[in-house]
Image 1: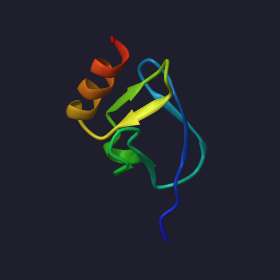
Image 2 (image 1 turned 90 degrees about the vertical axis):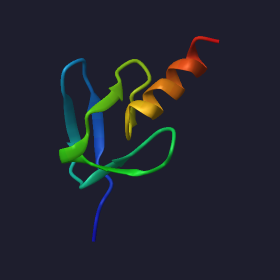
Image 3 (image 1 turned 45 degrees about the horizontal axis):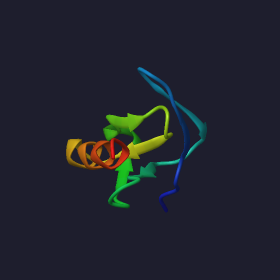
Image 4 (image 1 turned 60 degrees about the horizontal axis):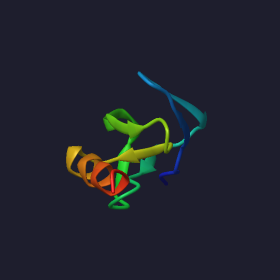
Amino acid sequence: MKKKAKVIYKHNSFEVIEAGDYVLCAISGKEISLKDLNYWNVDLQEAYFSPEEVNKRYRETIK
């Protein structure tokens, strides 16, 4: 059974504070395996599935 991890996002890395297999994309809600986690926002403490979701959040925050 998969478990959601709790993570602190840092500038060049992330720290797992509660073990798990995945985090959720803040935009799409898709599961992101920790081994595939490449995109996040340190200030918002959010993970993103792909550059598409990163761009969507960016466009929302510059308004």
